[in-house]
Length: 197
Image 1 (cartoon, rainbow, N blue to C red):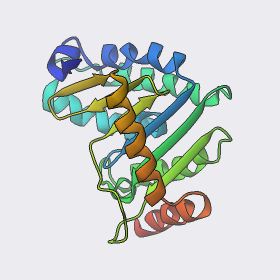
Image 2 (cartoon, rainbow, N blue to C red; image 1 turned 90 degrees about the vertical axis):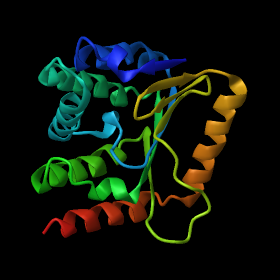
Image 3 (cartoon, helix red, strand yellow; image 1 turned 135 degrees about the vertical axis):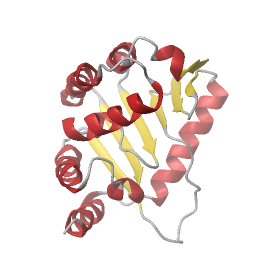
């Protein structure tokens, strides 16, 4: 099912944030890949505000950014549910995204290290460079192995066809094989923090 952003966000960003909460609540194994902007579950309040302000300016007439930020922050409490597991894969470029400026970036990167230390959270970073086996693709989230949500420029795609979901599960595995985890991932984050000067 495809939903245009303008339709989903016609009454503001808060409603769009609230709509996905039931899906998060019923998911026990969550996986997400992002090539450019960190996933909402990994974002600090300031980073989220920067992301949503940019979104609002680009395509949403209603300015309810602060309310939408609060909903996203409340949704992050789901990371504390130890009956659920979370695996995040990001491209290294996510660590160097300038949205919000250096101060926002420093807080976000420190927060990323903290979230990655949670027992039920795995963070993999696909390093920049030429030694990789998988191409980066659009941002997507896997909810168990039942649904994939894909964010496109024009809208939001929900995939439930098992054969198509399986393709995303497979791609997630390929990207995970190219990623570094643990201390190697923390080293990349620390390098990004140091680069802020």
